[in-house]
Length: 503
Image (tube, rainbow, N blue to C red; front, side):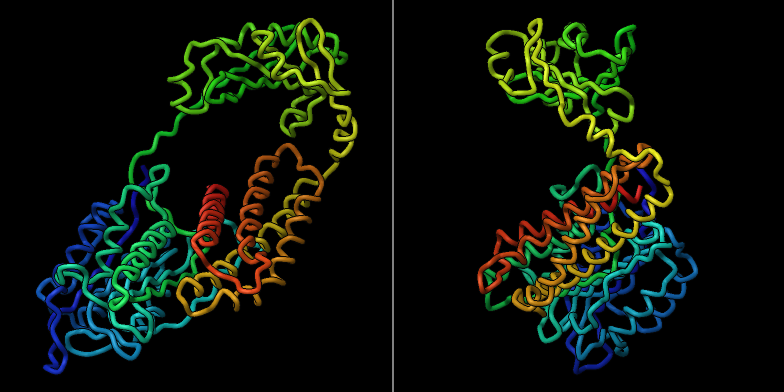
């Protein structure tokens, strides 16, 4: 697991010099609750956490001194987390001795020499700060300089709303919810926890609270200028490593094997390059030979299917034939064949077709479009120019996605209605589709960057999925549970795709 380069400044104000300001008895609980959740939930070293307010007092001098220390210590690859719990009023955070402008604190932290910053503000009227512009990316920028870079602010309440105590009254409601999100194991994916999943967890908790306590409801204001999201390493992750098989004989080269199991059958797919140029008559012989080798091969996609099918014989095996490595990379197949273990399985998979026939018990489908598909591959393409053309479209799609997510964040914040978002972004939907079509209509990718282009296309597809809630034909747009889930799922997959391209 990679080193956790997250540093935190936690401030909780309980005692106030001005007798007109009520002291807060929950300050110490808030402070230690946040510290414990960062250590337990985000695996931040206690040595990386600085506390102010352990005795209830936190002054402007304490803040200035701590910020000066962090500004000297932090490095570009670090994450900085700032937490404040106390009174807030008129766009200010109130410390024991005096107040300081909330926006000025955000502006200062944004300038710290780290790639990303997170502010958690738990005070009344915490949402009294400016909207944040989405991060932009220029063609000369690397994807690494964009993804995970920026500032996020999680505020407990809107600009005109009080921040409340949680059940029992010994800690702040919002701090409790954020702490719960930090320690939650259910939002860990592949050993990581994303800031986006933490935010969604907090929103869900607050929505539940507001439904159950309408007289004590509060609306968190959450804004971000981060490209994509931030991922925290939480635990060691060892993904299941699927086995494959590759070998070469005088008649053919087996390039790879993939499992295609369902709940009832062990099924495999082989990708094959025959050694002879004119090989169609050899397909049944090659298929039978591969089937004899593969039918008891223990090749699986998941541990669950391995436990279920291990050492069992395959019911059906597909062989996809290409004439060279480029065919295999681009899934351009001259033909495919099917071997079935028995007649019942054959009846299930040997489907009649004008381009198919059965020979020596093997079903063979000849791809009548093969020559056309081969001709579409322009082997004279300048890879550098091709990659630049794709990158231009890719970066524009990213910028559109970030703008849209930023807009929908304000819908979540209840600062903007779905009707307003729909009116503003219907033209945007058309442009996103145009970019997507241009991306998919571009020439077939050269083999050297084929996988990268496929990942870009997948990301673009998730951005298209984000638009679905705007394409509802009803006159009144809504952000109901179904639309919210559709949007959240598309955004989560978009973030995961961005992170994959960031590697």
